[in-house]
Image (cartoon, rainbow, N blue to C red; front, side, top):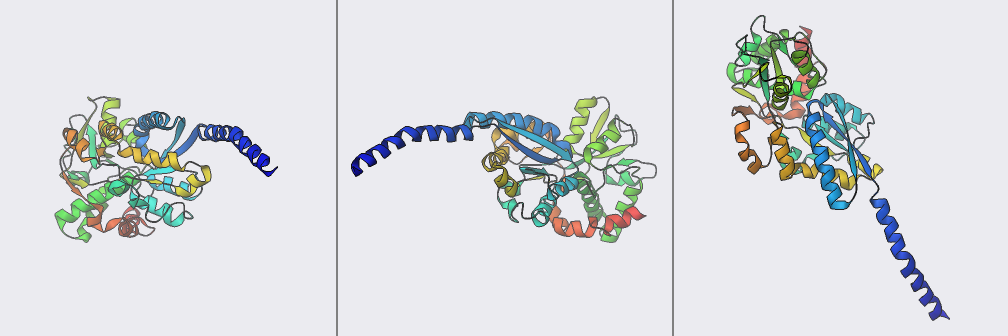
Length: 339
């Protein structure tokens, strides 16, 4: 009798196990949606990359994925995630903003997030250049020209924009190297901001102010954003000026682990970030004037990128120290802006 029961049970398992497996596979293959919270000028990059990744993921797993995008000033975006925006991944302008999510976001991601991906989680780099009007009527060549009387400089607010913080630190680093003291660097940056007629909240808003509203003589711009403005609004409208010294900007990416566990998107979100390092994605980044982290792709496209001296943020104390010193409430930027 017992033998008959065991045989019957085994037969039932053989009948229902494939059905259960098929049901599990069906659940696994349900379409998935994820959210990439990014900084302001990456719309075009991630629109193209999302399509590229969706094809990769469908071919690999048979699952359809839709990636929604959110864009804004990097600091503002970080605060939104801390306050509850359900990002699966963040792709922000600087590591400090992701550190803020790690330290103040209720353990949304681990403190060592930057070690999870190659190149300190920066799949591409960039720098800050000058976008000027065609034929450069104000003859702007380097940082010193930005403090001349009557020159209007367009740059966003470093309290909310990652690009603005990179631009500010590029100017600070230039002045520090040229004039030799922090006191003189602060005087230089103060003179620069006296020439800023409006502080937009984010990089794309500043591009709109300069390009479409026609305000200002020079825009402090992400390198990729400057090239986009030229291609979108006409090569005959603007010129790009590369200063002698700028900053090595390292936009970083991270998995918002706590959110992905809750949403069941861990695997797809992790793959989304890992694929940014693929040859195909690195080629895409280079085509849009982001500097690839892959040495082979970077060498292949070297002629797309100006050669200049690049200051690393570590040379200026690292982001933790820089944020406290320059951009925290009551810091040097607040002192400058109060004047």
